[in-house]
Image (cartoon, rainbow, N blue to C red; front, top):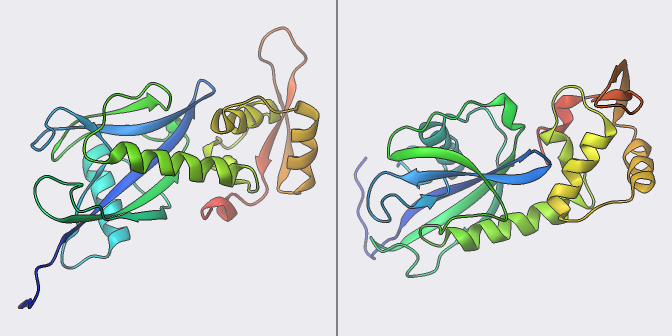
Length: 221
C-alpha cells in the first residue's frame, strides 16, 4: 500500500501487563530491554504496531515474541499519549492486561528482550518509559475488578481449595479477607462445584477441592 500524509503522524505501540499470583503474592511479568532506549532496563512487554494488524493482534504478537506467553485473553486498559513518553519519537501506546496461572507458562524471552521475569508488585525495579504509570493504573483496575467480579478464578489451576482462592483475592486486594464472608460470597455465585477430592496441606483436616463449572466463561473478564 502507498501512504500519503498531509500532517505529521505519531507511531503506535502496545504495552501488555501480565499478572499472576505466586506464593500468595501478586506478581507482574517484565522484560529486560536488549536495545536502546533504556537498554538493560526492565519494562512491560510490548512494541510497535505493524501496518497490517490491529492493536490487540500487535499486543499478542509482541507478548509471545518477547516472553513466550501466548493464547491469553487481553483486556484493553487505557491509551497513553503524553507527548514526551518516548525519547525516540511521538509515540502513543494502547495498553492491555491479562491474568494467568504462572504454572501454565514457560517464559522464553526473544527478539529485543534480553530476559523475562516475574516481579513482586511491591518490589519492582526502575521501569523504562512511563511503564510505572501504566502498571499503577493496571493494578488499580485489577484491584477494583476483584471486588465485584470472579476474575480471580483466572489465576487458579483446574482444581483448587477455597483457601487458595481466598489468598488470590487477598494478594490482589493487599489485605486479609474474612474467611466466612468470602466463602459465603464465592459459593453464592453458583460458579464452582466440588470435585469429590480433598487436599491435605499440613496437619489440618484435608480441604475440599473445587473447580469452575464452566471454565470457558472466565476467558473474558
